[in-house]
Length: 318
Image 1 (tube, one colour):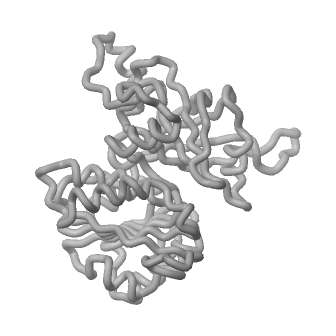
Image 2: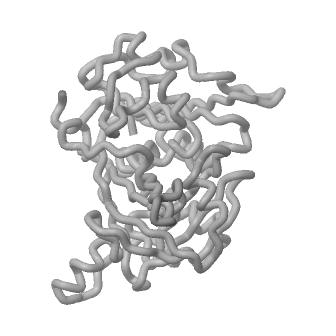
Image 3: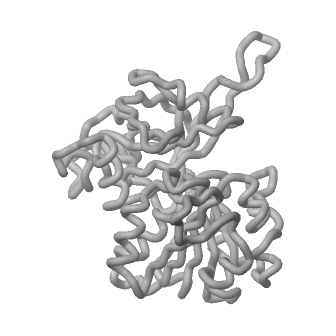
């Protein structure tokens, strides 16, 4: 197994969409006009060592749970909302590394003997820039059987939610691969964008990125404007292919489920210089690469990617 896989801490879910995409998305959805609000931090004010350590990740700690208050929420699509949580200090930032996620917990599970409910814990990916000041954003889609996502759907401004992190999943380094393929479904796009943006914004990173983005309907596609802008800005380094399960009459992209043919046409071929990321709902993961193991390790490589000749070290499941 390669070094980067041995070093990674495997948790289900997604990671930060940093930089311009995260800033633009939060400002656009919440209707902000002041470009400086939530923008990239240019410096860290002078602080004591203790204060600097406390605010390294905006008061968040990977070893203990901390409550964060919901400051704003706004609809993105029919069943998807942006949730903006406040940091204690207006000049603090999460400063999440690439690629990492946050863990969220709430007592919304089954009842225990003492009358309390069990904790339900899920990983989520901030879509705001890692250095956004005073807040961080989560985009959550409410699923019919999603216990935590339904809890998000019921949250009101002023409610609090316990979180901890960052949890590093894949320590990415520039040029670690020549060609990176990405297969994302729904909000599984977030880890892909965080890595893609880190690659594309770094002039010293020559890695090519190819993305297959699957959704149910065209209205479910989040961050499409930003993805299309990347494709236009970096035509030789970034490509995106949209796939819809329920396409409209005039849809010209992929139709149905992601197929072997689509993977052959849009993903880098199996090889030690290439890597394919996969992130999406469990049925899609099982179809493409197999799901992660119960202990959240990478698990056995299965599905279409195995059938096409990829090896376990050439696929990473977020």
